[in-house]
Image 1 (cartoon, one colour):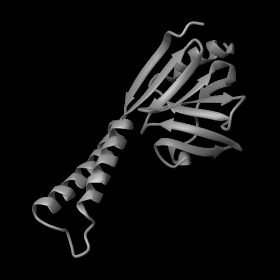
Image 2 (cartoon, helix red, strand yellow; image 1 turned 90 degrees about the vertical axis):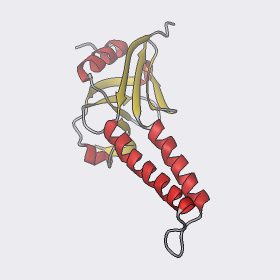
Image 3 (tube, helix red, strand yellow; image 1 turned 180 degrees about the vertical axis):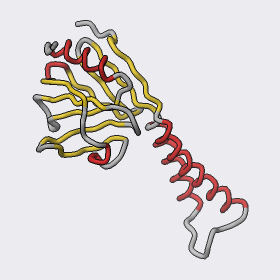
Image 4 (tube, one colour; image 1 turned 45 degrees about the horizontal axis):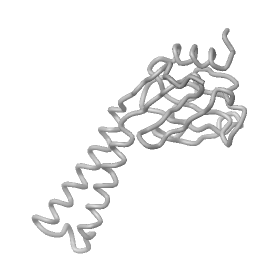
Length: 165
């Protein structure tokens, strides 16, 4: 079976990265302030806490800065950094443009939502269209992800699942 990529897309999530960068920088500032000037307030958290939180947010910021979509002849894989979800084409029944509002999912990033009685796993970025893959196996009945090229992604997906219209 061929495994070369038939579609690759990387979406840099500038808004999510900017929000996380502000939080990460603030934690670094608080850590440096406490080390150089002294504790903030009378009951400040220890330096190791701010160091841990800074490193945690730095890791989250790096991981969630880019959404990657990779389609091969065998499967589709969508992920943020090290957190990926792959589906083989045999498990996909249909593919269509998502009409639900981002608010329905409770925000951006990786989400789980129930829409029209079906559980959805969602990988989305701020702004832009999303694609829904209807699944015939697995815990989730639908997998949703953002893309800059919805028409091309739908065309390739429908070709792979044999539902060319």
